[in-house]
Image 1 (cartoon, rainbow, N blue to C red):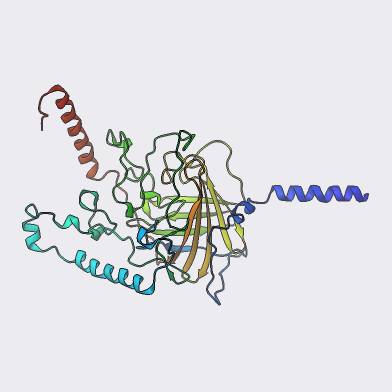
Image 2: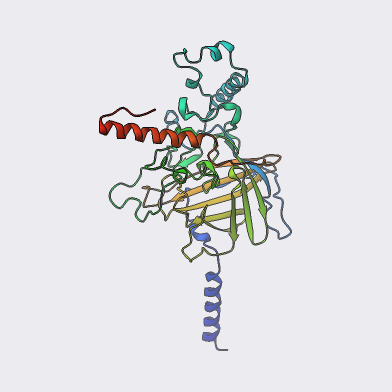
Length: 381
């Protein structure tokens, strides 16, 4: 073989090798995406394949919100005193809401000017009719999220203010969106869910979580965010895939390792996730979300990149980055650390519960009132 032929063969081999490499460069080119800090002296457990063992049951329950309260400004971390006060207040609140309701309050409920619904009975910030549960049924987490031991003001770390970037304005915003936006529900700290036209017309108009089809508040991810309860996840690995089983509604997301995104146009629940190893970190890239699973108002071309790294025996670092130029003026993302937990509980989802009947009946009553008003007659009760 001549020198030129040898050179051509080597170039061809290099080209073929590159063609089968995962899209690692794209993830590495994002300098704003946080990187994990492994605890000093910690040795990552490994599978028989030599890859890190991420398996186990993990929880991201925390009282730290996704977006940062404005009072912190650009401060990423709380002081030790601030964190201790918040966690101390939570202990006091829990004692109050776990205690039997005062008999006088029960007896005089209607007569009370505002009543207990003005208090944080939901443990998620909602009040009054926006509180679908009292705190005895919820478990959002009692502790501030810590990353490498540092108490955090928000899970979002970029932009620097801990908020999602401004939304794109104008006629091209969110171009190409399709399908009913049936899951635009922010995380629990945001209060009541957004009202969508037609959501009370029939059961199919209700959210995916309420219909037991997907996790409430898209806790299944990506992005995987803590909610009002059921914040556990179980990870199972093989050499070809990673399965992430979500306690909430028992979603299971499958990450195909060293694969390519599907090209058949099918948009699946939780998107199309592929993964690869960057050293001891599992990198996951997800696109192709089902149009009904709305990532906080994103368009159909949103891309989410995640990084999973074991940093201690009981801690799993999680970083995320969201890109959608059709929806937001910049990428946004952040980090937190899962904590190990003994197990995952059954989630017996019951579509609608008793609330659905009341919701639909209420909507029909409002429609009857509106129709009677147009006709100039009182609505029947």
